[in-house]
Length: 78
Image (tube, rainbow, N blue to C red; front, side):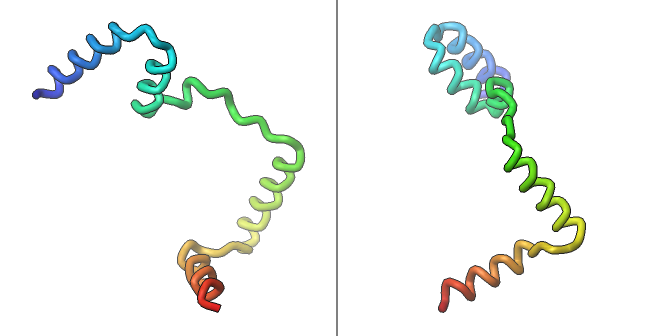
C-alpha cells in the first residue's frame, strides 16, 4: 500500500473513533504527546540541584558516558 493510501485509511479510521482514550493514545504514538502534557514544574530543591549540576559541568566535574560505563563495570565486578 502506498504512503498516501495508508494516510487516507488512518484518517478515515481516526474519524470513526469516539473513544477519547484511544485517540489520546494514537496521538501519543504519533510522537506528539508533549502537546497533551503540562510543562514540568520544578520545586526549589530541584532547581538548586540543576543549578549545581550546571556549575559542575561548567567546571569540568563530570564523567563522559564511556568513563561512567567503565566505573560501573568495575563496581559491578567487585
